[in-house]
Amino acid sequence: MNDREMSCNSGGQFMDRGRMNQNGVVQPLLTDLYQITMAYAYWKSGKIDDQAVFDLFFRNNPFHGEFTIFAGLEECLKFLDSFHYSQSDIEYLKQTLPEGIENEFFEYLGNLTAHDVTLYAIDEGTVAFPRVPIIKIEGPLIIVQLLETTLLTLVNYASLMATNAARYRMVAGKHVKLLEFGLRRAQGPDGGLSASKYSYTGGFDGTSNVLAGKLFNIPVKGTHAHAYITSFSSLGELKTRLLKHKQTGVMEDLLEHAIRHRQMLSHVLDVSTEESSEGELAAMVSYAIAFPDGFMALVDTYDVKRSGLLNFSAVALALNDLGYHALGIRIDSGDLAYLSCLAREAFEKVAERFKVPWFNKLTIVASNDINEDTILSLNEQGHKIDCFGIGTHLVTCQRQPALGCVYKLVEINGQARIKLSQDVEKVTMPGNKNAYRLYSADGHALIDLLQKDTEQPPAVGQKVLCRHPFQESKRAYVIPSHVESLYKIYWQAGKICQQLPTLEQVREKVQISLKTLRNDHKRTLNPTPYKVKVAVSDNLYNFIHDLWLQNAPIGELS
Image (cartoon, rainbow, N blue to C red; front, side, top):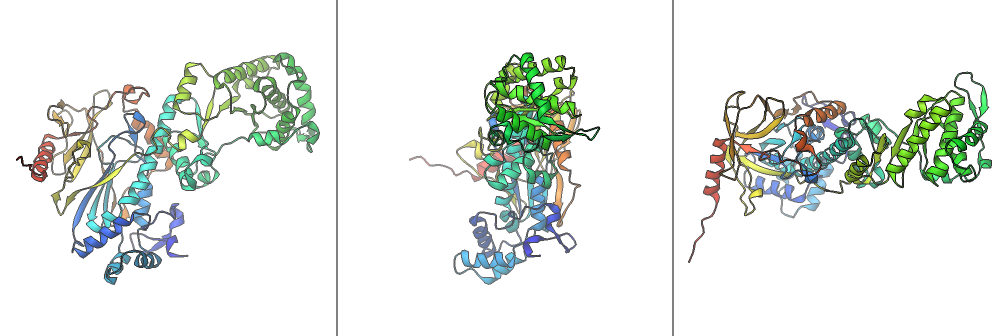
């Protein structure tokens, strides 16, 4: 076992990193070069013992929405647990960094771990808002600086993906199944696996990604491609026609049953058998023999109305003769609203004519480059779709391909630090802070409040002055009915400090957290802003502006 397969636990023992599903790519060298050159400059300047606080936050919600789902925390904790420069890392850095760097610095790097780091975070799966730090890192300046890029890459896409998935869940409604079909369109293998994991976190019901199913215990779903249908051109190509009856065990000719039913169905569905494809029928019979208890067929290879529905129904009834129930169909092209209604109407006719009530319950899956707007449009058209398979727009987050989390120094050696900018949005909020969410009497979140860490938490029933951090006239009193402290210590003294939730629990947390928002905050079109997104206490407001004035250069007119 090499050093990339080992990680150090709190007792100094080594354990198999594979048991934690640690991504082998996530390691200290997964960073920007300037993090390491800054580390050397800090070291050279004698800042080894300096203590710093960094905030990780985003400035704007994605997709023109008013909320973000925080995700990726577990991967950050795995990274801290395994943080260690291997000997090969050190040798590479010696070759890569500029000449003249002392060997003592490389020895220092070789002994670095995250033991002295403390990580505070909101719970994974929680709704988050701009400028409220979702992670707060305290510890020795050099090590917490070295963590920046890796933590950002672990949180940015995870949170963006979970948020995108949550939005799809909201527009689809709670009764429609959502499947992630995006692996082939994702940005590489890591992007594909992350998309599968965090789409499930955000509310999807399954994935087509088999490896994601294995690694994360996500339900794996799928049908077949058009290639399977077009690989058959005639009934004569069927080399296997027999299927064992589910109850009696007697072998019967499934094709014979299907042809007989197809003839009768042509009158029920008002479709001529001469118009339907025999190759398609052969492919469906073949697939049904392979998966008699899981027969889900693609019906749009040639023509849904004139061929696909007729052939599927014939094979489904043939399976019924042998004691099996088909699952449903997938439509991957065409007018999805019209075709889904056509299919549901056909299934209802078959159910009534052949006395098979379960035909009414057959699942209709739709795919074909679906996005949020597609689903909203289909809703308006009264579709009959039970499940959406969504790929490209989901996993690539085409409406907004990056969240834009940042990692900013806010305190060093107990002294607050502020970054100024002509763009007020980029001015940081200095100092070590705590965050609270204030709730109204009806249980909805009202506002997020940042305070200096030395202030007393807001109290239930007590009036709290909440101020916009930069606009003097924007302020309001809030009397909370419930106060939630957002931060927990998740990493301290070299170990994880909280019982980490399962993926299922994080998934459930997302839905619970979303319920605390009013519906108008969550709507797709023109959502109501969540107050000022973040408010600060009067004490913190004054502190920010005093520090601003102390650090802002004074101009001179001549």
